[in-house]
Length: 457
Image (tube, rainbow, N blue to C red; front, side):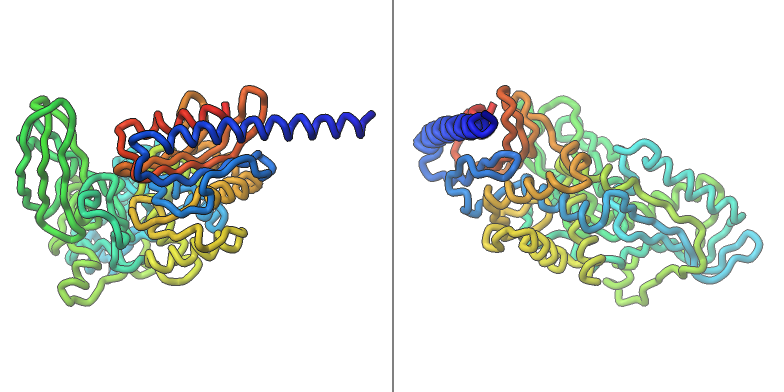
């Protein structure tokens, strides 16, 4: 009887899977025969929780993924760094302390903490870092600093933005670059009243604005253009006549942090006789780069744990976090804090998990570059492998719930949409899936893909 039951159960599951596959095939063919899909490409792959194949449509084809690529970076970071990994920002000095005088430079350094000054974490916000820094200076009775305030941003290499990022993305908040010392997620908020600039939430040192905004419409259609280390920022496009907030990426986060610290010290009556600068600016100017001594430490400030960062990385699609993870993996695994070394490691890592290297042609760690080409099958393989790891609950928690109850990461670029995730149907069947659609000429890309994914419900 048990053998008969097992055979019947297997047969019923097979029939059920065949029915789902047939329904998926109909939905896919309807989508790909529609007018907006005339020149579109799709990669789609579905498996059950055990990894058994259910359906594919060009599952091996590499396409631009947008942000579903973050699943590869998040899982690799959790596995290689550990969910309890923390970044450390250090406040130290060169020279010596005598009485109330620091005869030398005050130096801030970090190994790339992307959350320093972030507003997302209770206890880790800008005022929390300010309070601990000022307390450390006051406990050491420092009233005068004879040298400079230096932010040592030399832990990673000099390149702050991955090659291949579109110019019209990199100046906006989601296109913020990666420094060794990041601040406020390298984002500034610009208060606008129509096309008139009112103020920013943080001062951008030495930056001059070129404003060619126009007013019109009901939504924000503006673009901000900034470049690393540049002192020119440009904004154009249209904004509604009402007051709105527009967010951009800081051209020099380490210098912005130094400027804020100088203000904090002035408020506290601490005199800085020298200037504010960074290791990168010293390098640009051909000066000797200042570095803090490991023996002259005033404060070690640690970040939230990596699992907390992965949550926000996945839930809010923060590109800065992904590119920081890439550089951190490069530094930890290759001894070279570059994007190139980090991407090489990411490819090697997933190739080692059985994914065909031709299906994971990564260009960055966040998916913002249109030069990324990844297949749906590769994404499903990564999701299936992650499901077996001890940190899976933390990984899974970051996936947003979308499409009326499906736990999945989404990706969006011009004429491109992707979803990748996990779903339990009303019959209790557990699916792992990824779907990528490129060059679909419609404003309703999500709805188009939902009509396919609804079959899994």
